[in-house]
Image (cartoon, rainbow, N blue to C red; front, side, top):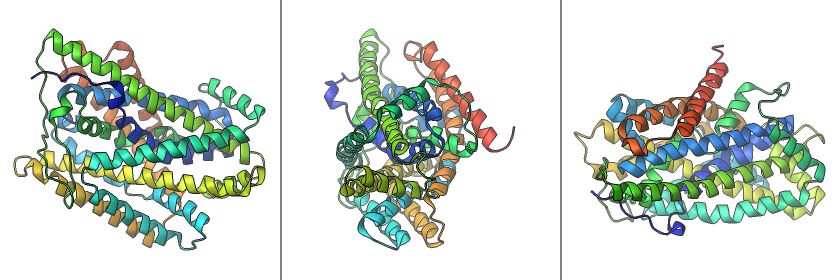
Length: 450
């Protein structure tokens, strides 16, 4: 089979916006601003390092899907047949905590004067389920929402940061960026640091969803894979669980490397560039407004405090605008999280039962997992356990452990299952090994093994 020709660069844009949206709602908008507002800019280097490592991790995930036309989960299963069970449970328990939508509800409740935040969180979860269920082609629904909200929200918040930040704040930012592996701030919980590092980007098993998105976008051999459609409004399409190798010849290798150049550029500009700029300026905004003025309130209340300082230093409506944009962006992040996790669990369950179930059942499995997660989130809200920062930190620590596992698996997969000419370079292997050891070490430290 021939490797398809790569289209114009502008037609490739899309998957990295989705992954950027996942990061904006966790590390960029919540965890790193929280840490810098409490502990200063001396740790901001770790945010840049985290996004950079995730760029290389994501590209190795893309490499496999680009060449094989199947998700990395299919490849993992070929190596170890028990792995789908791990990915189902590690995804469900790491992302069952509705910390992101709890934060969205808290910010939107502040804007509109709503007192029952838990009820608003439940309503938002149900709204997400309705949007994903009614969108005819799932990928297009998620991509369009990410494109619209990011292109509106990110420039608005960046403009606000540039307006408020003072020259001394920029000096502290650049100093923190250059302080690689500098002294650890006194009082900074290791779990919170690991959570922020894991969420400097998408984080956890969510990185692996990139293989779904590029497949459904039609990257490389993914062109032959098919798309998940709504069970209510979409037209059922044939979905190929297992991909096919392209024929080994000079022309197909040339086409692969052309794809590889373009998808690296797409991910570098949108995911890495957008992620680094967003995380630095949003952290700078928090640092400029609340650091050293007063101790921010417990948990996510620091964002409310930050908004009040923005209003005080500029105009009252800008503080409200900050909360509104943040709440909407977090809503989009939770929607994308639920889509990605439902895809991961649905495909892994189908892989386990591929001898009994046909691939046409994948949409039904996907929507079953989607609404099961929404139901679990509602139950957590009803129990009253709705402190956003606690929920997000729990999720992030579990996801750091998941990253330790899948980084090693992805490197093993690419080194053994791909044509020798298209395997990772020594530099990329080195980055993957460093990432594997880094996440392994900090995961063990957080679990008090050392």
